[in-house]
Image 1 (cartoon, rainbow, N blue to C red):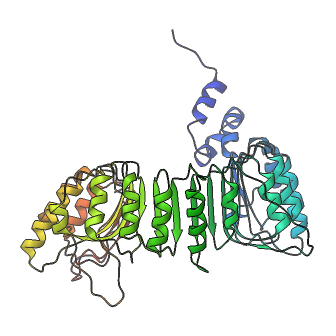
Image 2: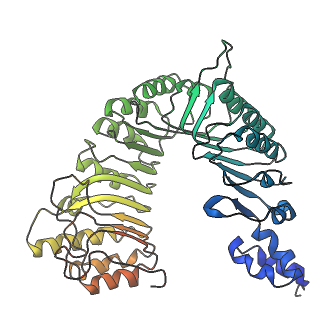
Image 3: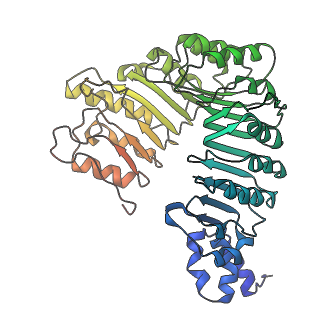
Amino acid sequence: MHTLFTLPELLAQVAEYLTGEEATRPSRVSRAFHQAFGPIVWRACAIGLQGQKPSPQGLITNAHSIRRLAYDDAFSFDYLSLPCNMLTSLMIARVAGSDSDTKWHHLAKLVKQNRHLHTLQISDRCRSATLEFWSSLASCTSLRTVDIQSAHMDQEQFAALWNGCKSMQSLKCHHIRVHSTTTTQQYPLEPHPTLQKLSFANFANVQLLKLCSNLQAISWYNNEFDCDILLEELATLLQGGQLKQLDSISMSHTKDQDLSRCLKAMRQIKKISSHNGDVGPLSFHAMSRHFGMLEHLYIPSDSTLPSEMILNILESCPQLTYLQATKVAATQVMKAKSWAALNLKALHLGITIDSDDQEVISLQSRSVFERLSKLTHLTQLTIHGPYVIGNEDEQGLDLRLESGLDKLAAIKGLKYLDFDHTVQNMSGADVAWMAENWKDLGDVFGTCNSEGEFYEQPVFYEDD
């Protein structure tokens, strides 16, 4: 028996499959279409971003449909008194000027009337948020994700944020400054058992780690100082039986011995990322007992990890989906055991050929392509090693059909290809093969023909 739908019911069913942009035109067809598609159009609303300024009357009329709202400082007070009460996401950018306190007052009222707010992002030089605003977050009992970038606050304001967001699961603090208050009053921070992800950038407060008993992931990127203090504190907590759920570490300026100490104490490891630091032999041996569950590994360009250990990672990590490493020789890849990392989606690894003989280059390239063809889930592929200023381009894999490029036809979803700083001599046919077989390929980096006979760089269009 067939179910019959009325027109409004049918349009409502169709609307669920459309984006806001796609729903704009049908919303103008008739009143019935507007009732069905209008809420989809207004579901995500941006004010001031890239010059977008919806009419105040339109915002007020459709405020009940808005779920995701983005504010920029290019708005007037007409936009600050919206009767929105169903927001799940709020982004605030560049609130400044002599009237900033008044703006934050209105934004605090907006937050209080949206108790189901799930995500809050404050970015781009919002340096003047008031205590009233930070305190208003306590009313959002569903707030899970808070992302703050380039902000100034005092200790009382940070305590209002930290202690007020009881249900917060993820906190990102990038380039923020917490200043001492003018009084001697202390503002203690309470334990935060719900917090699972903590991300810092140029913000030092290692004491927060002690308050997050169920922390799963920590990111710490600093240009101003090394991570020695944090790693020491982290290792002490781990060795003391705390942070039992921690399985992901992303840091900068790490030393191999400091990182390995933390890795030894972790009960499980899914992600390791070290920018501008070192993941060396000590860290390799510390993480090796967790190879069965490792999913993401970023090894910096100046790492001391030998190529043999890099290949051992590919041979031993069946859950690995992302690998960035330095480089290995094609001959090593040819002699290596079968790779277990067949679920890789992103592989950034320099593969070099130490020969000028074209026959040898083609033979080795074909063998490596045969190995890479097994990585059928790849969406990102980089085949050059770390670039050193002053060095000539190195001989990498020969990306030509006559050297076995067509073996990569099994990789259907490739979107990113980087062969920069390698010597290539592709023809138009080779470039055409890439465009034909990798329909989703949008980002390509490298010179197709080092002699400049055909193209400096391939160009792919969405319709290709």
